[in-house]
Image (cartoon, rainbow, N blue to C red; front, side, top):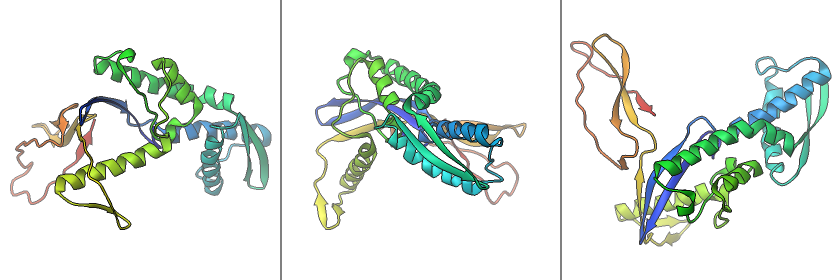
Length: 258
C-alpha cells in the first residue's frame, strides 16, 4: 500500500524463477485516504471549538499545514497510542488530540476493502492461506498497526520482517534495475560500485487490462482492449485501426488502464 494505490501480488519461487501468479488491487486506495480520515477528525474538532469549518478554497495555507502535520502524525501513531497537533486559522488556534483507536475506527472501512482484495487475490491464484509460505507488507501505507493486524488475522500468520515496508519498494526498484541491465548486457553501477547480476528471473503478469480509446460507427467512445489481465509481460499485441475522417493528419492516442 503506497501513497495512492493498493496492490496485492502472489508470487511463486521455483528454482531461480520468481513468477507472479496472481495480482489484484484497488487503484484509488492508499495512504492519502488514511490521511483524509485524520484530517476529517481535526476539522470536526476545529468546527466544534470555533464554530466554522475552514475550506481549502478560502484557507489554502491552513490546509497545506494540516496535510503536512497529518502525514507526520500518522507515522507517530504507528508507535504511540495518542498524538496531538496545533492548528491555527484566521487567528483561531486549537490544540487537537487524536488516539490510535479514533484513527482505527475511521480507517476501518478502507482496511476492510484492502482485506477483501487480498482475499480475492488468494482465490484467484487457486490457493488457500495454508499454501502460502511468507507474507510481506510493502509500502509506507501498510505501516499503520491496524493494517498489519488485520492482515495477520486474515491470513492466520505473522508478517515477515525480512524486509521492512518502507524499504521494500526501494529494494524492488533496485532488483528491477539489475534485471533490466542484465537483459541488456550492461553493468549496473552505483557510485562507482558494480552490483552483481541477479541469479534469478522474474516472470510478471499484467494486473489490469490495458486498452486504447476508439470511436464506433456512431461516434461513441469505447475502450478497445489491447492487453488482457494476467497476460505475461512484456508482451506485444498488434491491432489495425482506421482514421475517423478522410485525409486525417494526426491522431490522439489515449491509453486506458483497467
